[in-house]
Length: 219
Figure (cartoon, rainbow, N blue to C red):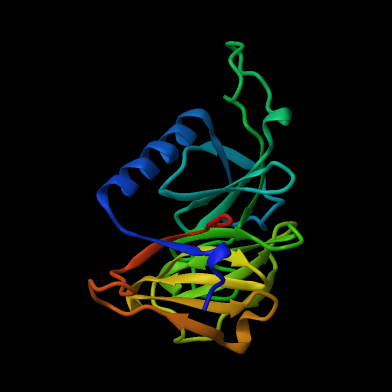
């Protein structure tokens, strides 16, 4: 059981939450332009060209201030605001710098299929990615997209939200109607615990999506 003072709050899918996320993502899309690498070029090295987001689903901020956007079958890493250049019209944010793209469409290690939740590693050098339609969580190195770790096959079914707490990575295993906890430093060794089941009673879940760690509860 989780300590009372460090509750893990589980938010299931609902209209209000979805609308809030759409507004937040929409604001990012309006302000930012993504440079996409040429399809045949190596990640991080191919000449980029301008293109808007395709299907942005989740955003996160690295310790270096870089914005990570889960977009279709890739993770776009954008420069922090201090590095942004002004457009020809003088308004900032029109020429945001794409640092690199992590992942590419597919099911092989390092490839992604509808990524969703993002969670930075404890040292900030990697990012856990809920690789939703590949039914796994991968840990990718931010510097080059190399795979650092990955959950085993047939453990998750449509993972969404992620949350790191006390050395455990909690995963909203949406289609299995549960929350699963893995050793954050060894995802491949299997999950340590799980809780929740389909239903409407307290403790039951209906396709859980988002996860967040709560603050200390004082009596």
